[in-house]
Structures are given as C-alpha cells and as structure tokens.
Length: 170
Image (cartoon, rainbow, N blue to C red; front, side, top):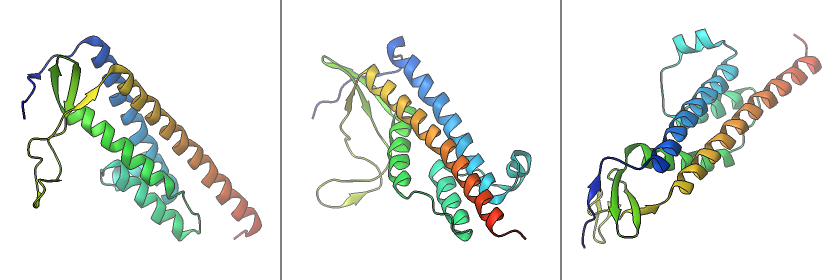
C-alpha cells in the first residue's frame, strides 16, 4: 500500500469552510450547554459554575436523563445524528491531510480498527477519505441544522413545562 504525501497547508477553498465548521461546532456546543441549563432550571452563570465541561454527546445524554426525571422525553434519534456530526467534525479537526493525483484525502489516525485478526487501539495504515470543499460545507450546514434543532428543543421543553405548571399549579 503506497502512502500519499502529507500536507500541512491547504488551499483557501478548504480552510474557509473548515473554519466555519469549527465556529458552527462551538455554537452547537453552546446550545447543548443551554439545553442542560434549561433542564436544571439554572442560568448561564450558574451553569458555567456548576457543570463540568464534557463532550457534546455527554451534554445531550445528560439533558435526556435530566428531562426524563420531569417526564419530558427528548428525541433519541438526535443522538445518532449528533454522534455522526461529532465524528465528521472530529475528523476535520484532528485528521491528517494528504494530496494525491486525484485530489485531497483526509486520514483519521485515532480510534480503533480491526486488522482482520484482532482489534487494535490505533489505526494501522488507515485509508484516506477523498474530500472536496463541498463535503466540508455540507458538514457545516448539518451542524447548523442540528443547532437549530437544539434551539427548537429548548423552546419545546419550556412550553411543556409551562403547560404542566398551568395544569398542576403548586
């Protein structure tokens, strides 16, 4: 198996959408934090003091568990979508770029893989994934949609709480 040369400088048509993915991801994580703060009925300042930083999926899973205590069910389907987005974002953030005759490739050097005989902790001779700027832009759009979904979820649970409080005043 021939290895392609690694590159450290990408053309602007790649770096601009990658920068947007990182900005979108930061905003997405902020909205997930707000979802947890909403579950705990605390404000942002209280949340920043009381909640330990955790990966995005951990925040969503925490919110699912917290809302379940109130009888509010969050969509489990979101977990699959969010995990996929996290995987794509992580590949862009931590992958190694290569350039070949047919374009650019991104190689993931983390995680586990199977060499056909046993599982190993590090990827051994991982294959590169062909990638074009439109692929990166698509990831950005998906993260923006997931952020919008979280914003709508926050509004929905606030409505559910309000409706419950109106039906069952303390």
